[in-house]
Image 1: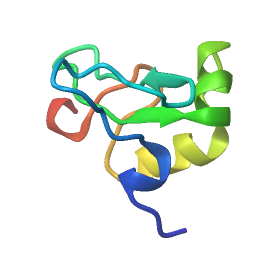
Image 2: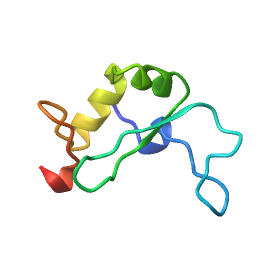
Image 3: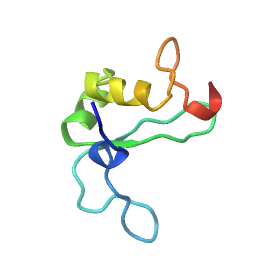
Length: 77
């Protein structure tokens, strides 16, 4: 499966970095450095419920993230 961060993320707008007029968003952040994609729409709603959607889980894994036992970006694994 080929995908990019842009498929899962929304751009932050405004000079203060606040999402303006965007659908629901959820920040998938590495607990060490804070890096990570921002999920939008259905993916964001699912993640807010405490479940990382399968396509997002797969994308993170393919991108070098450690998802189990703890979420870590490629720079922190």
